[in-house]
Amino acid sequence: MNHFAQKGLRKPTARRRIVAMLTQEILNNPDPADFPIASECKLCKRFGVSRVTIRLVLIDLEHRGLIYRQHGKGTFAYGCSSRVHPSLGILIKSSDALKCPPIIEFIRGAQTVMTSFNSSLVLLGTSPLNWRGEMTSAMGGVIVMQENLSADELDNLKNRNLSFICIPDSQLANGNTDCFHLGLCAAKALNHAIITGESGGVHVWYEHPSPSYS
Image (tube, rainbow, N blue to C red; front, side):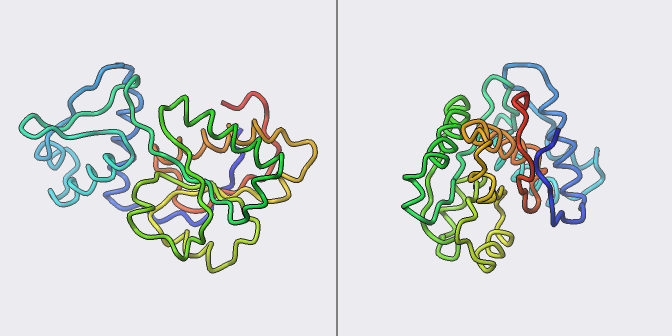
C-alpha cells in the first residue's frame, strides 16, 4: 500500500522518459557487481535523441547514485550490493521539538534506515528560504516536519530540484502512531522516490503505516 499522496507531477519529457527507463533497467539487474552501460553514441541511436539529451540523462542518473564514470573506460552502473544512497535532510525548525519523544523516535527510525544504507541523516534547523545551493546539492531529499512551516517556505521547496516528504504534525501527535516505524517508512519511501524519480512534487503522509511496509 502506498502511504503517500503525490502532487504536482511535471509533464514527461524525452529526458525524463529515458531516465525512467534506464533507472528501471539498472534496478532490475540482479548482478551484485557493477556493470557497464551503453555509450552515449549507442544511447542516442537507441532513443533517437541528441547527445545533449543523453548527457543530461546521465547527469540525472549520476545524481541519483545509480551510475558513475571512469575516464577512458566508460560509464558504469552500481550493482545491487554497491549502490550509493544519497544523504537525507530532516527539517525541524523548532529546537524545542527535539525534546519531544515522538520526534526523537521518528528520527531514530529514519536514522536506522540511513545507517543500513551506509548513508547519513542531516538535521536542518534553518528556513529553506536561507539554504545555499551547495547545501541542497549534497542531499538527495528532505523529510519536512510541518510545524510552523510557512506557505512561502513550502513554495521554495517545490521550486528546488530536491525531493521531499511532508509529515503532518497531526500524524506525530496521534497517540496510536508508532513514530519509530513512521520514520523507517518515510526514509525508505523517500530513498525509493529519489532513486526512481517518482518524487516530482510533494508527498504527504495521510494514513497510519502498516507494520508490513518495507
